Image (cartoon, rainbow, N blue to C red; front, side, top):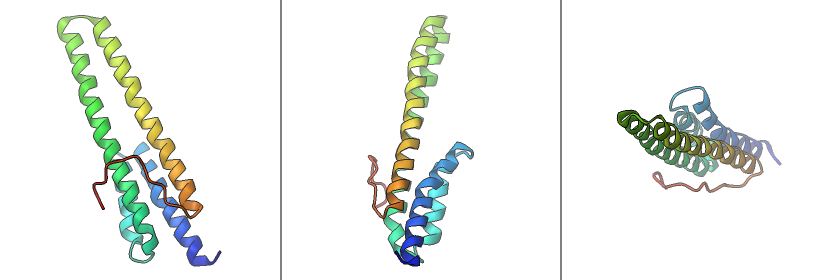
Length: 132
């Protein structure tokens, strides 16, 4: 494998792994891959599909998290409104666990995509294609 191919694989992997910046920075899951993709897509055009996949997936995950969060806080508010701690905790707990599961699965898929990118493959995330 020549140095250019190694650079393409490394930057493709970094493009996917940059989404893990969301663990430390708000909206870092979108900003990280977007920055890597925009900086490197002209130098290494092979990175373009990896950047699109990563950003599309992170936008999809953000939308899912926002929807679940809206319902989570809605059910907690409903439980507090009717004065039932059981309603507040059980419905909120279930949605909170589901929200955590979505985040965990998204991190796992990011790592799988990064490994595939390092092997020279394009991983297609299960996401909505906002950017084509």
